[in-house]
Image (cartoon, rainbow, N blue to C red; front, side, top):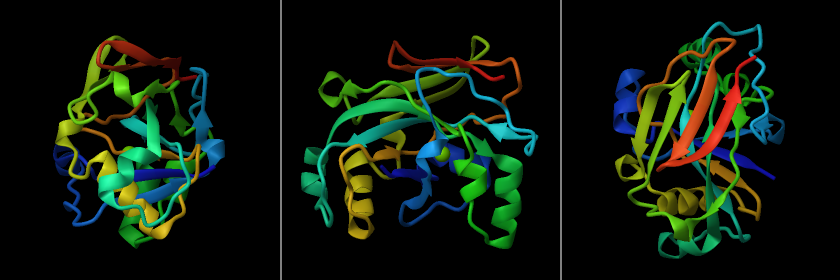
Amino acid sequence: MNIYAIGRNYTEHIEELNNERPKDPVVFMMPDTALLRNNDPFYHPDYSNDIHHEIEVVIKVSKQGKNIQEQFAHKYYEEIGLGIDFTARDLQQKAKEKGLPWTIAKGFNGSAPISSFVSKTTVDLNNLNFSLEVDGEKRQNGNTSMMLFNFDFILAYLSKYFTLRPGDLIYTGTPKGVSAVKIGNRLVGYMEDKKMLDFEVK
Ligand code: MG
């Protein structure tokens, strides 16, 4: 199972990190050992002092395909969920300065909490609100209408380079409001009013 992730997909998040607006999706991958399921706690590693939460909508590939046309991309996923793309911002910053890969900063153990999945037919994919609370305070609020690249475009784009397979996950980028988590924080993620994630940082 492969885990793909898209960076810089929401304008205001690009601005808060002073990044360039991409012409094509920014793609990176994470190992499946990054996944954290069932609201298991996130154990804060000691090699970073600046681990940021990034709440993201995640799509689950349902059918094998490559070179998928955008107009048919919707046939390749049936379910969506909510995930967090924890990022060791200090390690990522060092890598960015040297033009090196982000793999460690993005793909470390437990860096990708994932919710259960719901049928895509239960939501409006192009106008879906999602949010993250830390200790009861709203930190991130997003709507999928604000994505630079929508789900179908992302899936088609990835499939040009990678054969997508059932069970593959695609983290689709975070809206503004990222910030560091601390031991003891409780993170709760919502898709519309539905609580999808609820776990502690330990
Ligand atoms: Mg992200």
